[in-house]
Amino acid sequence: MSETSVKASGGALQEAEQSHGGLVEPLPTAEGALVTRTVVPRSAGHRADMLRHIAVLSDVTALCLALVIASALSVAIGRSLPDPGDLLLFVALIPVWMLLAGFYGLYRVPNRTSEWSFADDLSAAFVVCSIWGWFWLVARSIVDVGSVLPSLAVWAASILLIPVLRSGVRHHLRSAPWYRQSVLLVGTPVGVSRVAKRIERQPDWCFDVVETIQIGGRFDPGGRADIIADKARALEVGRVIVADAPVDMVERTGLIRDLLEVGVHVDLVSSEADVFRPTAFIDHLEGLPTMAFAPVRLSPAANRIKRAVDVAVAVAALVALSPLFAYVALRIKRDSPGPVLFRQDRRGRYGTRFKLLKLRTMAVDAEERLDEVAELKLHPESAAFKAIEDPRVTRYGASLRRRSLDELPQLWNVLVGDMSLVGPRPLPLDEATQVPPRYRARENVRPGLTGPWQVLGRSDIPFEDMVKLDYMYVCTWSPRGDMKLLLRTIGVVLGARGAY
Image (tube, rainbow, N blue to C red; front, side, top):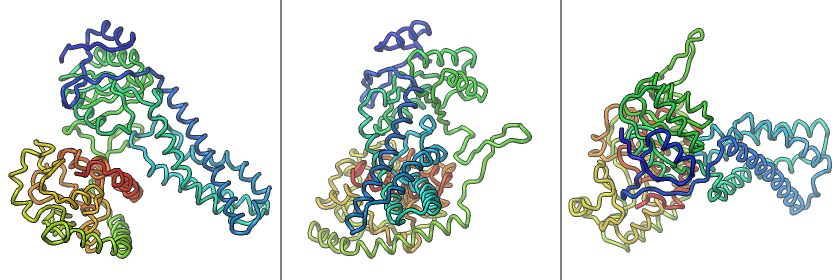
């Protein structure tokens, strides 16, 4: 383990360095420079309380705005304003909303993942508003007030307004020092570097890496674990991410226990050799805690549900987008010689081969010119070829790629059963051979038009990380997860993030 220490602002950090012999190492950027930030120390509990109060205020504001909109619509269609009794009933049921939202987990800020998004808020708002709406309808039937239409309008408006206001509040708070989470990274050099790169790629997480503690090999849980806990206390961090260290279960448990006693949120990042898998869950055998594992596969019922949704959406989208297809086809023909569609062999479910369809965005001799642009490869160590400025891309093709419109013909692949709306990335045959055997479970489902790779950064994500994301998707599949990825895809496409 290196004993290099760095200068840092704040007396707490200097005191920790002096008392623990310089366990801290600088966090380098991709260019090798040190990351320097002015981080305001903050209490994790104070931050959680603030966020919880703001979330409650945002939700109540959204409900009131929904009532105002419903009242305005009622007047616009020639009806009267809501009955005063209905208004009193609405106010009386606001605490019921707060209880339902709290029970559903909308206010459990300390347990909230860093990737909580508009899509999560939308799905949660739909469930909670629907249950709350039934309470309102039952209460209205008891007290016998006015028309039911205002209640339905409030229900519909609330489902949209709640996630919109929450998203707006999050966006506004990102610049507030207390909102950002100070993070201490602990682990092996490789593990720390891997986590740091992800944090750098995801500014929306609002993580400020205060310092890193790099550890090589085993350590005594009663020694250095205490030092790390003291460091977290001295830095007043709100989150500690343990990446690939320690290896021994007893050591890891001791480290996590000491950190939790400090009062910080702990994230454990498992190494590739770790026994933990996304399907693991805690069970008990007559009071004896056990770690249980389930095989990685989708049930027949889940496959049927997923396929039914794929067919329905693909048919509707192909019909609705047919005028756009015709317009884009004409633009492609005018922009450069060659066919409108590009066909390429890809590896599908269970290793089968299929022809993936895309709108042509490159010159017709693009594959023959691959050696000419080899030095432009975005990730030289990766099996996949991605380049930020590929000279083979046509002028109109670049526009299609930025908006991901070149992927739309894959709706036909979805319709005929080669692909799904959401799933792992369909790999070219040469890239598919580079997937490690332990991640082959990613082929247990159809590849997707979108998926975690597209949502989390697309070309910015190296091949190895993309494979792991696909594996995690298969292991943790759910209809709600697919809906979340579809909704998040809209924002990614509009922002053209990671599209080259």
